[in-house]
Structures are given as structure tokens and as C-alpha cells.
Length: 109
Length: 115
Picture (cartoon, each protein chain N blue to C red):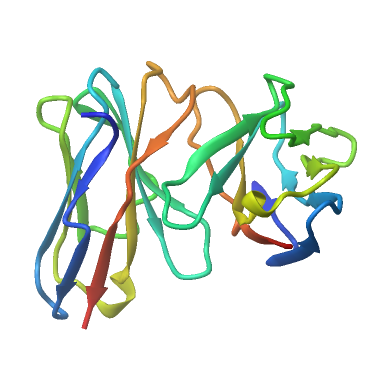
């Protein structure tokens, strides 16, 4: 079955510490993968997509097809990174976007 | 408008009542999506419109749920005979892609509470 898993519900780190938010998926073929973020009292918004291979706000995510993972990483967390993060795969261009359960990132000063 | 607008922002109703939730997408966006988010969960897909037609309604949980987009812009999600389990935040999103491509722009959501 097609599934996206974010194994942790909460990650709490100190400012300046590295961050890795895990995402695993089980989709056949070549899915597209996205990370969405929701800051406190703001709307859900796109953070980055694997196709772009870009770094946004210092975050990067590499698609590992062998491990079927798309972990989100940042070398030095900032307090403003505190938010809810959702991994969202899409099986193909004509498919709907599916969201994981999300992980709360808390960055302490 | 500048972004996706959803009304009402909060709706409290009694079990068995009928509810309508409205979504006004970003001007020019042809694709419109409805998601439902329960406490502690990620957004759950309900239905997707491309123009006026529902291209994928596989996420609607049962026939009490229905959505329309008669002129290809504003959409209304309709819930009949509401149940306590329908309580959730209903999110609307729009996209400029002709298919299910591109970035989704979300509204702030409509929080539905069924007593």
C-alpha cells in the first residue's frame, strides 16, 4: 500500500544544533516528494520539493530511492525554525498530494 | 484576493445539522483541493477540482460529503447530517497547475465542531 511515514512526533533541539526530520515512503515508480511547513498561527506552505534540489531557509532534503527516504536536514537550527513539518509524496504528476502525520520541531534558545 | 480565503473560520453545530464551508481560491488558479485535518494528524485529501469538475473525489469519506465548484472559482464543501467525528479543520488549497502539479496554496482553514 502507498504510505508515508514520519516516525517521530516531536524533535526538540537547542539553537545551533543539527536537525534531521525523517520521512519514509512506500510508493512504486518515481514519486515526487515535498516538505510543507506550518509556523505558529500561519498557513500551511511549501518549504521545498525534491525536483528543485534547492536549499530553502538552510534546509535541504535528498531523495534516497534505495532507502525510500526523503529526510529534511539543516546543519544549524534557528529558533524561527520551530514549526510543524509535513512530508508529502505524490505518486505521479496526475496524483493527489498525500501528507504524513507531521513532526513538531522545537528549537530552544 | 491575495490568498485563499475560507469562511467561516469557525463553525459550531449540532449533530445532525447541515453545514456548508466556502473556499475562494487565488484568482486564476484552476485547481482547487479540499483536505481535512483532525487533531494530531496530517491533512487528509478529500476532493480535487480542475475547473468546474471534480477530477478526484476518492477521499470523500461517505455520501454525506459533497463539494461543488459551479463556475470554476469558488467552491463549497457540504456536509449533511453532521456527526461528532466530522469535527476537524477543513483546509482548502489552490494551484495554478492544469493538473495536480505545482505548489499548493492553502487557506487558513474552517474549524468545524460538531456537538
